[in-house]
Image 1 (cartoon, one colour):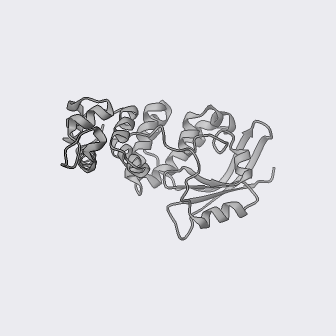
Image 2 (cartoon, rainbow, N blue to C red; image 1 turned 120 degrees about the vertical axis):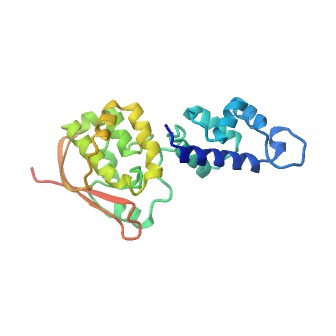
Image 3 (cartoon, one colour; image 1 turned 60 degrees about the vertical axis):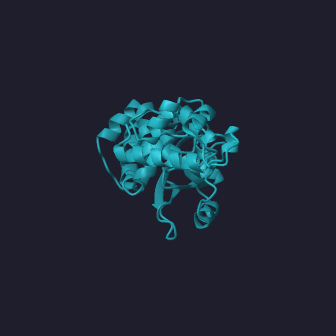
Amino acid sequence: MLDTDQRRLLGEFVRAHRARMRPQEAGARRRTPGLRREELAERAGISTTWCAWIEQGRPVQASPETLGRLAAALALSRAERAYLFELAGRLDPAAPSDPVPDAPASLVALVTAVGHPAYGLDPLWNACCWNEPAAGLFVGWLGEGCQRNLLRFVFLDEAAHRLIPEWEERARRLLAEFRADYGTNFRGARALVDALRRESPFFAKAWDEQDVQQRAGGLRTFAHPQAGPLRFEQHTFSPSDRPDYKLVVLVPAAR
């Protein structure tokens, strides 16, 4: 459930963008700028009452599908749509799964230059760049058309259960490491966390345990579907020009 400040910000955002629209976009012929609530409601396929309540900051529930229609009715840009979903505490089902286009150039260069599996993570732990060895290792995550968020892969994808031995222990550790970043990226991470809590009972339970751990290196083992058992030493770095991003390199470990 959104708190009072979040509901207020969401209402202000919707109201401001409704006021910016041209009446002609709703078929009206008046010169006064902005859409009326009933015009926006009709365009979005929602009730005028619901539209009023969300603008007033009342505690209403909005499904991702409803938010998508609202974003389309308001003619929001990609960035504006993402912000709408963030304010509403929802994960956008239409969000692109391709690598993040603004991955720091320095990070992309490092990932490309490494001969071992390497990938970059953005502040929400979406894979923003990776090399071929990493794509070959992380089947189901870095393959074509896959969901790029590391947490969603680990907690929701059966491929992660097969790839990662001692999955439960590794998943708990990963979540504790993410929580260490959560405080510095609270607003952006909230929608992701709320969505995972709804979709994964194990995630919800582990999240409530409040464990925190800095992302660390060490031995990582995998049960690859083609290559069999694999062992790597994981090393994690942050680019000096973008400390909110991470470079993760997996160096083959001695057997």
